[in-house]
Length: 318
Image (cartoon, rainbow, N blue to C red):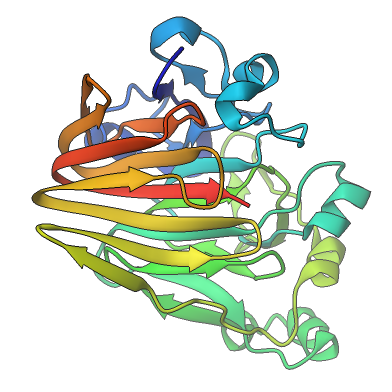
């Protein structure tokens, strides 16, 4: 029985994607416009594959169905979270995601609350994060007038920033920004505004979902970012980035020190090495891990230790 599950990601080519998943993470990407690495995913649109041990070659979705013991015998039918890396060589569309109730009624899948840890940001890069409309009527009015600069809230970003993006939040990742995204396992996106761009693959503008977007957008916008809580250890730290309805996300940092860790709110833990390298120690097993590695600590493993000089973003579902 595996004491850790390493994953081989799936990749998505996007009109806004670039090459940083190759240059920064050394992945074998399918194109020069690769926008997304679905790193820990059981979603049918991009399932990750187990890369080690007894279950090598199975998709995460297959493992979820066949070996529920590894996940604490969950009651849910689908693996609840999805970890991605997004490379925005160009700005994404302004979009919004539905909550669970709307998504299940209209799309027959989970809603999509997400969050972003900024892995890199070129000078002057920004996000669209929220809006300035006081209510739905003002939102519709600014859309009808094409007053996008007045409507959309622009936030400049730097490496290491973190943003919580609940369902109902208008948002877009700007050009020159790479993020690690933790989200509910959903692929429902309503495109609100796309800068009148033409998709080179089709020669046409991309479909907008204006009515669904207005239905789902929370007004007025309320910034729900939480103040990170850091616990310091000897040459190491744990920072709680967000504790939300659907998941918790922590940053584990080792500065040539070590951290001994346990599951917090779920029987299993998702982890992504976003910088540096070191060792993962479980019982008498030692695994070398480095930037770009993604793994799950299953329910059958109670304790593990990180040793080295690295940053890991970890999440657990609720």
